[in-house]
Image 1 (cartoon, rainbow, N blue to C red):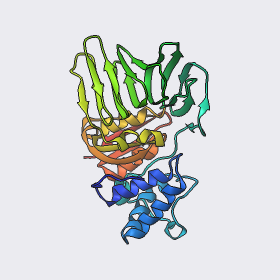
Image 2 (cartoon, rainbow, N blue to C red; image 1 turned 90 degrees about the vertical axis):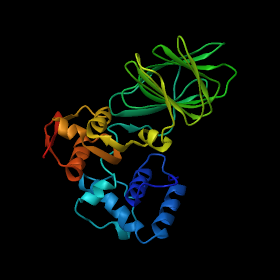
Image 3 (cartoon, rainbow, N blue to C red; image 1 turned 90 degrees about the horizontal axis):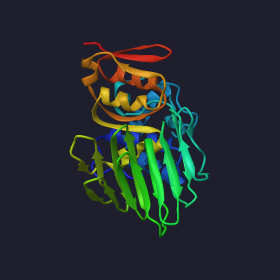
Length: 309
C-alpha cells in the first residue's frame, strides 16, 4: 500500500487501509504493512476503528481485517463517515483470476466487473456496464470501446495495438491504459508507457501519468490525475475529493439499478470527500445522512436524497 506524500488526514489513511484490505487483490504484504501502520502511532488503531464503524453499521463484510482487540461494536458516528468507508461489495463482484477468452465481444452488466485475457495475451478489466470488441490481424490488434470503462494491459507484440472510442483512436505498442467512454465523452489515461491519441485533425502523445479528456464541441483537456483515486474502481470503490453530491451520485448510480435521486439543488450542490464501496446505494445514502445535512427516503426501486436545511 502506497500513500500519497502528504495524506489529507488520518481518517483518509484509515479509509484507504480499509478499502485495501477488502480489495480482491489483497496480499500478505498488504496485511503486514497494515499491522506495521497500526503499531506506528497510538492514534492509528482508533482511527481505523472509526473507519470500520460504518461498514459494520450497514452489514459489514464477511472477512474482517481488524485484529481481534479492535473488533468492538460501536455506534455509527460522524467521525466514522468522515473516514470515508461505506458500502458492500459489487453485486456480481470480481471474477477469480483471469478468464481466458476468444476474440469477439466482451461485456459486463450493471454492477459487474470482469477480467479477460485476449488471444494476444493482452489483459483487460471491464468495469460495470461496459462493452468492447477485439479483433486481430497480421498487421494490427484492434479493441473497440463501445461504452463503459476498461483497463488495458497491452501485451508486447510487433503489431501495434489500436483502441477505438468513437471518432478517436489510441495507438500503442505496449503499456497500460485506462479508458472511459460515456456517449461521446472519452477519457484516456496512460498508466504505464505512452500512447498516441489520434483524431481527424489532431495527434497527441500521451505519456505515463497523463490523461486526456475529449468531448465534441470542446477543446481537449490534458491533466495529471491522482492515479490511486483513478484506479479505485478496480477494487470496487470510488474516491471522491471535494466533489458535489450530484457528481458522486452519478458515479454511484453506474453500479446499481436501484437509483439514487438527488431531489433538490441544495442537496445536489453539497460537497463531500472520501472513499466509498460501490454496489449498495442505500449504505452510501445513509452515510451522507450522517455526514451532511440531508435526509433519505428509501423505496424498493430508488432512494431520494433531500436537503434538510
